[in-house]
Amino acid sequence: MERTKIKQYETITDWARAQATVITYPIARVLEKLGLHPNTVTIVGFVLNVAVGGLMAAGHPQLGGLLLLFASSTDALDGALARVAGTKSRFGAFLDSTLDRISEGALFLGLLAWLLPQGRYIEVYLVALTLLGSVMVSYSRARAEGVGYACKVGLFTRMERILVLGTGMMLGWVRPTLIVLAVFVWITVLQRILYVYKSSRRDP
Image 1 (cartoon, rainbow, N blue to C red):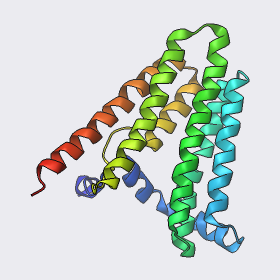
Image 2 (image 1 turned 120 degrees about the vertical axis):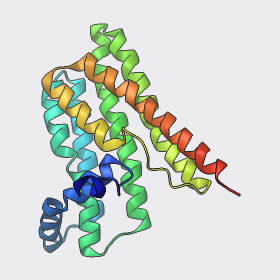
Image 3 (image 1 turned 135 degrees about the vertical axis):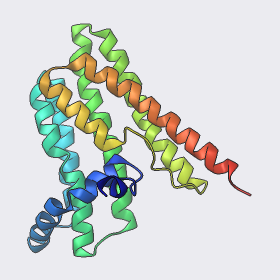
Image 4 (image 1 turned 120 degrees about the horizontal axis):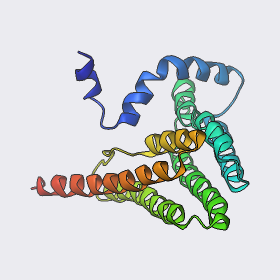
């Protein structure tokens, strides 16, 4: 029975977000009573992610990884608050996605600023591959939706990337973490390309 429920979701992120409602919705109701707007929560999450990038750049990747796992919780809270408060909007969705891309860029730029002075060029190349792949994961979905295909498939959406990055940095597993990210973001890009290709072949 549990397997059937999981198969209803296109991504692990969708499934995890649905399971987390038992936690996020009560918190969202408290935030609503405090008068917070979902966009405010989105901006707070953005600031926290930029702060994590600063910690990485300053040479504190383990502390940064720990804070990143905490900051990632805002990704679920802003959406939950919008649903609870009935304030879902197109601009809110646009702002959330846009700040997510900037946040991820800040995280990886922070890592680059830490790695480059150490001459750790393998890790630098892995960060560059991961950053480009992350952008392409998001772009492939946006472009697919632009031509009429809902393309949310793929193994490493933002939630998976953030969890792997935060956990890996916290444990000090820098190179293994970056290898996993660099490989799986590009697998996700290929998954989305194949999905759109197969969908297009089914068109009349």
